[in-house]
Length: 149
Image (cartoon, rainbow, N blue to C red; front, side, top):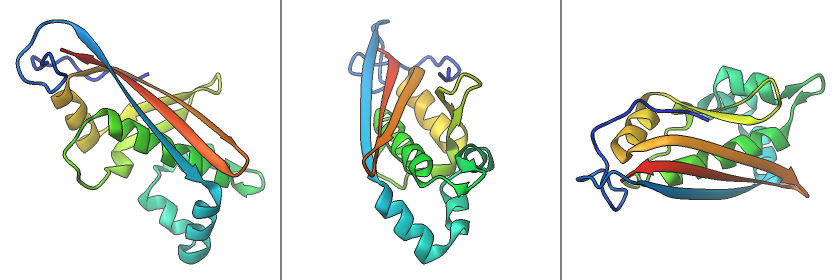
């Protein structure tokens, strides 16, 4: 779970405008076919992963047999799900500024950096959690954000 620094913003509608002092919940979800990740790796090589995943994420996705496409697909789904909770103006997803790492217990944890961190602070995000799963050729993620209102 990540905890962006507190901000004075926080609107009743979760927009970051004005404030009523409560907490709202936002959710985001995404699903990624592992076959799509496989196609991208075949077309562009594993170097393309460096444009979407941090070095730590690539390390988490690497097994003794190489890159786990299921793990990559799960992280991409998680990043998109997190982005959806930010209610940012439709722009390019700041892939490298949303980092999904595995804790020592094996659970996913989100760290926001740069653009994503700024978007979260502007949106009044106080806490963020993500759950990921993969099975049957698909990866799915659900993100939940507690937002100051």
